[in-house]
Image 1 (spheres, one colour):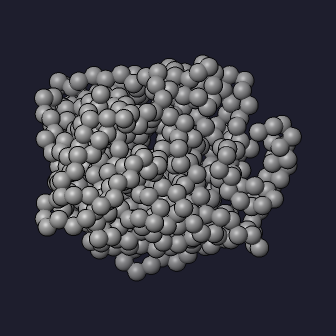
Image 2: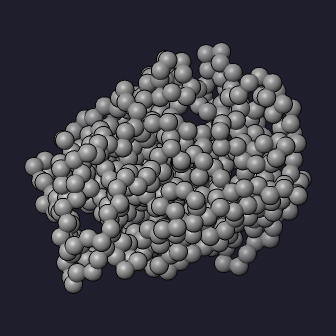
Image 3: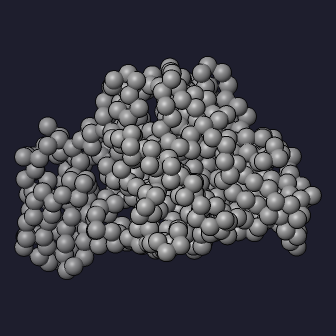
Amino acid sequence: MNIFKISVWILLIPIIQKATSQNPIYIPDTLGGNEFLLQLKNSSKEFYLGFQTQTNAYNGNYLGPTLILNKGQQIKIQVDNQLSETTTTHWHGLHVAPKNDGGPHNPIFPNTKWSPEFTVMDQAGTYWYHPHLHGKTFEQVIKGAAGLIIIHDQEEIDLKIPRTYSVDDIPLILQFQTVDPISKQISVNNDFDNVSMVNGTINPMLKCPAQIIRFRLLNASSRRVFNLGFNDDRTFYQIAGDAGLLNKPIPMKKIRLGTGERAEILVDFNSDQGKNLILKQYGNELPAGFPGGPAIMGMSPLGPLDNKIFDILNIHVTSQTNNSVTQIPAKLIENNPLSPSGAIERSIRFTAQPMMSMTNFFINGLKYDEHTINFTVNQKDKEIWNITNQTIMAHPFHIHGNSFYILSINGIDPPENMKGRKDVVLIPPMNGNVRIITQYNDFHDSSLPYMFHCHILSHEDDGMMGQFLVLESPTKTEQGYVEDSFKFFPSIAINKVLIETINTFIPYSIRIYDFMGNCLKHIDQLNSSYELDIQNLKQGFYLISILQNNHPYCHKIVKVN
């Protein structure tokens, strides 16, 4: 972006931020039950009077419904892709098998559906869902394709804490956005960030009853860190992190959230009826090198909202409701962190090229390659990941399919509010170090990987990501796979994959896709047994799509040399 264009954007920031004085906050609808339908499509929303801003959305025009789940519940989710391009839907934070994870290896092609089924295994907490197609995550997410997942379990239900959605249990999906000052369209080409939104509302206003309120916070921005506190410097209490409740409420005056991180806080409004309060961003109190905070080493902040204090949410306190919660509990649940004893150590290193770059990043010297498995993990092995950041900015680090506990940050114990289950952690800049411990107990797959990556969306799309397999044992090899009416053998192959019909033969056709949705081969009218030649494909992952009587069957294969 050239200097003239930056100057124009900065001059027009007051115009961008002033949509109307205050707008009632939008609270996403909820979906419950055992079966869910999410339709992802292009839409538009009037953020500014008289302007229709182009968006993506699940089941609406911006953001998606909040999915309400219970631990132990068996669910089926049908994702209908009505976009004109391939997408995925990732259940961020959920403990699911790789085939249900929704990462880059679970593509949903245009005008097709994906129907994962799984048992909810996670503790009560706040999770979320969003697209995760490599190279397209930034664009699809910032235009509105995201939604919350709330999980309840018996331990949480037994606690006397707020639980009435939109009354005393309120979701706050926090975003920074780049909006063009003239067209009012969301920019998908930069991280300039000149507007803040809560639940897709600019200058939001919320009415809260005079009692204990539970806020579920999600940083759904593409890049920046939120550092939140109240205008009267009041104390609030964090009760949950990314993946579940803490041992007890932790008193705080500010809470920091990197991209993808979640937290639940309790705020005591018992004595505030009739008052107006403000939840504010305190970017000026972030450490240097944290996106949204002050410059580092004399470099200029990237965006006009960096290193600033400004309003995030205006709150008007109304009268108390019936059956209200009026006290902060003394205890919550008992977390049992993994012991480091006997754990395998693994090193992960962030670098930049050149060293002072703010855009070109690597993990262990590599960019993401969908055909490369960066490492393997043995099921049930405890692993300590020692993550060192040698770049000049902080990076929020996320792993798929599992949570972890933080052992240390820059060599010291994590703060009390970060001692619960996590799936995102900010790695400090300038040789900052974080050690985490995790254990993949329940799922293994010798061909379908989990991802690990920076959750700054432009960094992720540019290749600051890797992938790993969880193996049942170091010596196990896959023998074959049955998908409804077809058998595939082997799933890890060098030259050929045998496809056989299991039931009565009906003609079918085959297409082979890469994971950007490109069709590489198309064969029609096949026999009951067919040898699919893959020797000319590059090493990596591919999707076989079979169409029989207009019914699609999909199976992933791994081509090896």
